[in-house]
Length: 319
Image 1 (cartoon, helix red, strand yellow):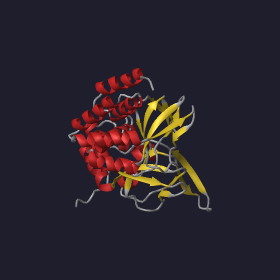
Image 2 (cartoon, helix red, strand yellow; image 1 turned 90 degrees about the vertical axis):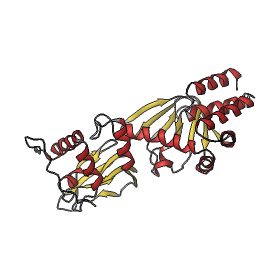
Image 3 (cartoon, helix red, strand yellow; image 1 turned 45 degrees about the vertical axis):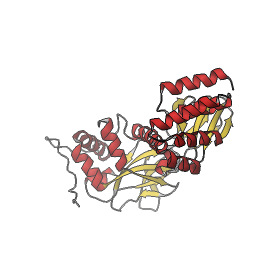
Image 4 (cartoon, one colour; image 1 turned 30 degrees about the horizontal axis):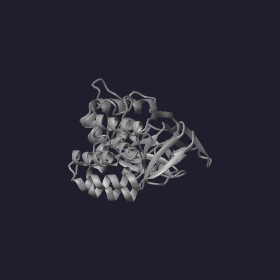
């Protein structure tokens, strides 16, 4: 490990002092370059910025130095969407990685210092994307137990990981074209906190035709098939849904039973709003209300808005 590379990592961390990934990378590279005093200083400064004592910085330093290194050749997977059951979190030390999602393709490329894999352990869901080495990659692996122990000494670690994971999921679920895409950043973040994360195994039904609807769901990752029975014991496939797709809104809008079954074609990760929160959101955000109705119009093939723009939604009983 060269001193020059370690110093560049130190400079990057200093320029973004609240970036956990850059801090971790700087600490590890400085230690590897025999700049241990600098590594200790970076860890302690990060802890102080997050209202922790020096022993929080010591705990961060120890966790970074104990973390396992993982080396990958170009094209090898660091994380696999839907099938990787570990709760490990990674920080890239060297090399770039590609982030891909089924049904979407490549989402982005991430550089050294990036944190990867934090969404699944924070939300309790399956992995929502796959990560592949673009070229040779070296990453640090943090086991969930080690992170849990570190968060007790340095609570800011958990807050930073949660903030990173939340911002990624909010951007993914509530993008500009989504039903809640017209909300402000603060409003979208607040709405995300009300969503319940759900992982559905391949082959399991999320909604069954003929049963009451209980929630509107947005697909974070995976694919689902929408089908109805054809009266002869066979299924007639209506459509396939992928990341960003919304379903379940018709049953809630019109207080009726689901008219089709939605079944997971792969492991499916959903974020769901129950009926009360869904109707509350439509009442608070008129633009979202209109977007939901337009979606319903497309699916039903009929016009639903009257001249005043009112929605014929079901009345929701208040608690």
